[in-house]
Length: 233
Image 1 (spheres, rainbow, N blue to C red):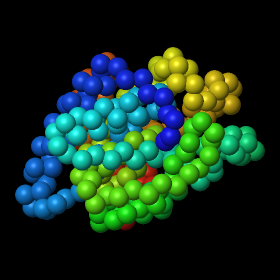
Image 2: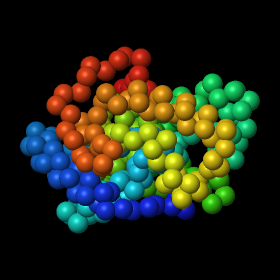
Image 3: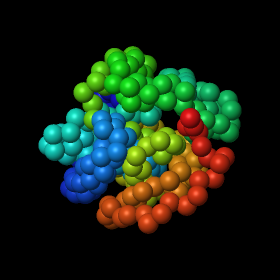
């Protein structure tokens, strides 16, 4: 998203370094059997948990390792533009807040363009004015797609899934510092509903970042509940 505010802290840099090493290792293994494999890492977590900061610091770590990254923010894929979203949510009594608000077909199309090394027309929200813009990305030289967002773990074919295990209540201070949305009763209702959907994807994580921002391996993700797959082939 354009004009987003990032609050980079040492823990983001430390976590990014560990995840970068894991990506490089996984890429080496995958490319032995699938030469030229295009790698996707998905980063999910509740609002204010540091997804954007982690995606940015991870992309910088990958660049230093001579691996070309590209960040894709799933918050650009809301079906309703920011300036109209609150009005619609209030009209629906917040019943439809969650993963279903996203255009998963468009997201899948852009990811397929990445896999195929094609040019792609992608949505991009300008946070300064709430306007939905379109940008053209050339994926031909991109090695790793870093997908971040509330429901990023809904991407079924991600090669590495990272979940930040912090609730929005624990991160309200950082959310206020970023000043992305008004902190009122409507916002609280949205955060509560989003939290339910975000937690439903936690089972897909390969790595979980805990409350101290330590990166922990998940031995074996649980079997996927069939009803939770928003992004299917």
